[in-house]
Structure formats: structure tokens, C-alpha cells
Image (cartoon, rainbow, N blue to C red; front, top):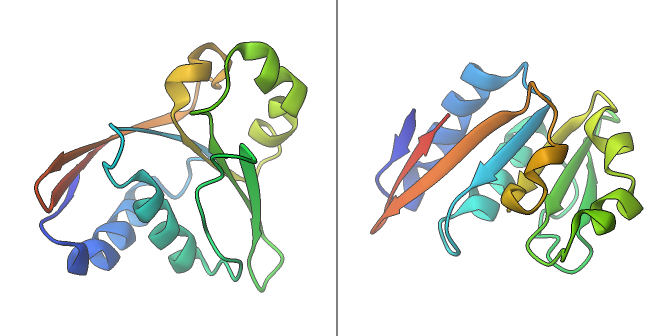
Length: 134
């Protein structure tokens, strides 16, 4: 578990999270609306050296980000999908099994499609404090 008590501590929390979970490729982020999933993913991407702007892919469902070294990261937001067919139509397997990092928001919508080795992360808000449990 990683905790930050204020947004000013997110950099430290993300660094610790990366240190503990770097080998994970597919990471599912659970948490209520406003829990800070996108904010935490944005900081993780920044620390990995992503040069693209990191935003929630709510409407596009998936965003692709790059680092200066050519690494690729995928960021999913399944909030708007209505059924698993939409995830299949997206070609989720190409992303999940690409060997690149995949960050998934609202994975509940496609739980049965997640790889067996998917790292599941729950962000629990309490005022300004966030517990990141994995």
C-alpha cells in the first residue's frame, strides 16, 4: 500500500508505487468517481518519461502515450463501454498482450477480459488523503 495525505505528496507516492510494481504490465485502477485514478496515472506516466499530455480517455476509450525513448503506454477508460463487444471491437488483446504498460480505469466493465497477471489497484479517498492498495 502507498498513501499520500495531500496532492503535494503524489510525486513521492507514484515513485514508490513504480518501485514496487514496475514489472506489472497491465494495471487496473479501481475507485469511485473522483477518487484520483487519472491524476495518479498522470503522475506515474510523468515519472516514466511520457512526453504526451495524459488525459482520461473517457470518450476515446484508449489513449496512446510515448516517451522520448520510444516506449509506448496505453491508458484505458472503460466507463462508457456498454458491453464486452465494445472492448473486443477495440482490439483490447493487442494492447493487453503487447508487452507495453496498460493502465485501465473502470476495469469493472471488462473484468473477465483482464489478464490473469493483471495488477489490481484500489484508490480509496478520504478527504485529501488517498490510500493506494494493491
